[in-house]
Amino acid sequence: GDSVTQMEGPVTLSEEAFLTINCTYTATGYPSLFWYVQYPGEGLQLLLKATKADDKGSNKGFEATYRKETTSFHLEKGSVQVSDSAVYFCALPFYSGAGSYQLTFGKGTKLSVIP
Amino acid sequence: EAGVAQSPRYKIIEKRQSVAFWCNPISGHATLYWYQQILGQGPKLLIQFQNNGVVDDSQLPKDRFSAERLKGVDSTLKIQPAKLEDSAVYLCASSLVPRRGRGETQYFGPGTRLLVL
Image 1 (tube, rainbow over the protein chains, first blue to last red):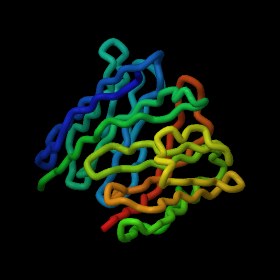
Image 2 (image 1 turned 180 degrees about the vertical axis):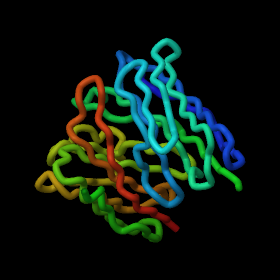
Image 3 (image 1 turned 90 degrees about the vertical axis):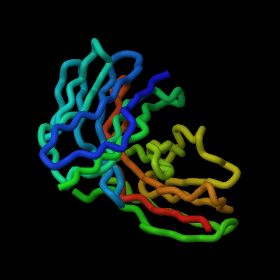
């Protein structure tokens, strides 16, 4: 079935370091792809999304490119800040078979940025 | 625009007690979701509503969990009786009706943190 595989954490980086969090997917067709972020003690927030192949989603300095040939949607940021410390989830919509589309989430990657 | 509201934010109960969570989705969002997020894991869908009808409740433990969405707006999720393994964050999310082949962005509330002792 449709699924996402996300790199395991935790990831600890120094401030201003480069960040990559890998996400690969298995899907029928070409669904939209999402990255969500969960800050400590909060719910999930949409970080960025891409709706078709070769699209690049971007927000708050984060970017991810929808790559059909490698079935990947890796999250990158050139210079992380302490405030980026959070858990990041890759997500993929799939047809539930019950009449609607739902999201399946990766297991999450915890990022800690130290000053 | 107001986001998804949930209450309470925190709840501590003893096992075998009952508990209820409330969610108010974003205005105009027909689809509402309840998720369970156990510490260190991604959210797991419990139930999905479209308007006031259930679309999918295949992962809802129906012997103890129930949910309703009256008038297609607010929703409540109830656990009765609670077990230790129900300790988790319960997230409510809402979206427009998902488009075929694409899905829709889901907007999440802050969650209710439940601890069962």
